[in-house]
Image 1 (spheres, rainbow, N blue to C red):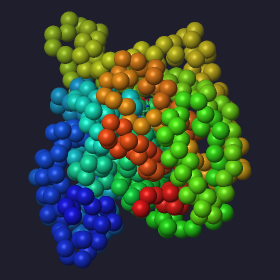
Image 2 (image 1 turned 30 degrees about the vertical axis):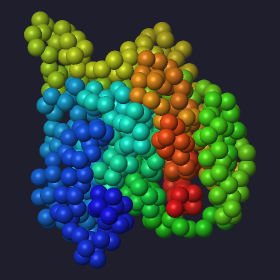
Image 3 (image 1 turned 45 degrees about the vertical axis):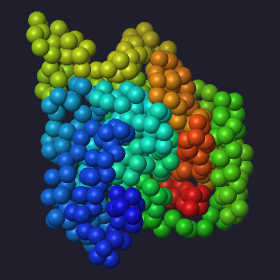
Length: 473
Ligand code: GLN
């Protein structure tokens, strides 16, 4: 087996057995990237030299000693580019400091290696909004890998990475993980520090792992979780050892099946796999009960008001004054802003800034933004009520398997509607995981399908318990 095919657990075992050392592993991954990534486009940049230098010094006795982790290109790693998939930063921006998650990974011995492709500023569900280049699904190169963490999921699925970090604002870890047949975790809002993450929608964003196994996901979540003063939204709660949930029995675990998530619009082939995975959980002693999340139909509208409003404020900082792209030949300050932002941002980002500015503008903010906040509370209450009866919730991740590149590109609304099963978790602040549960064959290609498990706030332990029971051997 090529070291780039390994999971974190396999890589650590090979190091400890003395069969492999971190520099050889990095070299093997770098050559896998050289071989495969031109076709896939999972990486925006990678620097084997500095990774090799770090590998030479690595301590394999640490929990992630010598383990390379690919990083979505909007999390700052000191000295590395951080383009956010945007031309506005791609020109010349180098991160001046490490994000907290990177500091934690380094303390555990990991090596941040490679910048993963993404939709520009994490806005999208297909990676087609990358301002830099397209990313393809390794299972079928004509299809999207999902988004916005499409690169992170594609490199893990293509075995050009051991594991990766992504971000999830409305499904951007879980949905690409599902489309690429890997595991992806959106931790509870506040579980993981966002210090050093370039913000998209601050009340929704979370950083989480994309991995080959549930065990790896539990380990990475444990390492990056925890509070700190630099992100005041962090929850000051102890971090359990999530790895202990892996393989733990699920007898008596109560699983809610939201009827709104299994209705109209769900591809019957996806439904079949998700239901089979649920039966697999039942056969291990879990109890299932039908539940209702009655405000689900308002989730897409609510999300696309709140997320765009927050994005319009967060993206104001990209003005070409202190960093990033700067347009030539402005006549005054306003023309400098206009030209820089018109040249630097792609069409989806512009659409969101315009939408977000509109829903916040005087005379409209009560009608849109304030109302969306109220509906958000109703959506959160739906989950609070449901979690009084059940421990976790199981559902599909996406209504269909990965679609063809270009298929939805001209219809942003169709793309937004496909987020229906993932965005409520962000609005409610709860945790969720995507775990592979089968494949659908189309045109001779095996297209992965994911099972979503949603957990209570800080309920990650039960999430890993259920996901490990559902995991395909
Ligand atoms: N697809 C959603 C959007 O376009 C989610 C993005 C995300 O989670 N970053 O906003």
